[in-house]
Image (cartoon, rainbow, N blue to C red; front, side, top):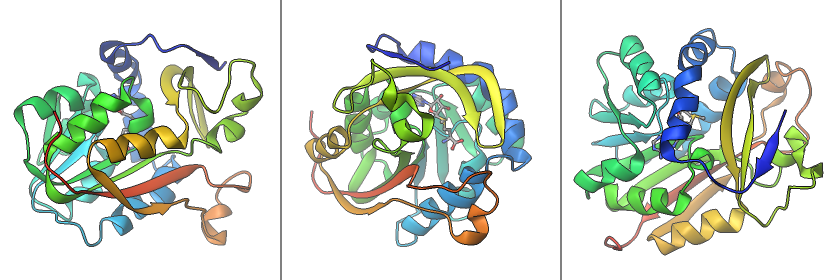
Length: 252
Ligand SMILES: C[S@@+](CC[C@H](N)C(=O)[O-])C[C@H]1O[C@@H](n2cnc3c(N)ncnc32)[C@H](O)[C@@H]1O
């Protein structure tokens, strides 16, 4: 069941949803049941950060820390933050050597201005209720000229892939809060999580407003070998990867 409507959830409600799924999600990932995570998302994030400065990295919305582990191989100074305490608990159990912190991106930025040389974020920005606060906070966390590299669901194609573009409540140009069962290609669950549909222009305009210049965009499609692992062939990209550079001082 997929339900869409006006935005009303707070960070603490979002955190509870991810708390509820934390154990199951951690197990799914450790068993390599999420093909897109292993074969599409982590590879493009590693590729898009190949020339980034890994001296002090933050993983924004790190969840159970599965992808964080891959970034840690390139940096021994890395912090993973997530608003869900039970996701962070799972992350600490599987990687005690990594510095994981329970906090929202917004609150973490209040005490950690101009600190990080790189921010990576996998599949989090479409899950935050207040994207403007999150982009502004991310900008505040980063040093001048550092990179922000993130993935999101594709704002145009994800609604087609999930089939909700046919619903009366869907309108591409509007921000819509969407609650649905958390599903991955090989595994359907009864846990509800929330994501926000926002048109691509919202991302591009907010990045520009908070001093991020987009330097690369990717719309990954798996190669034939990886595509054969999916039950059905992708007809269009499901995700977007964006790489930005912080170009200016902080905006208050
Ligand atoms: C789809 S999960 C991605 C988790 C992780 N990056 C991964 O690749 O497995 C989205 C995550 O964003 C977190 N999140 C949502 N809003 C947040 C916020 N404002 N600050 C920090 N984390 C947030 C959720 O708790 C959840 O763990």
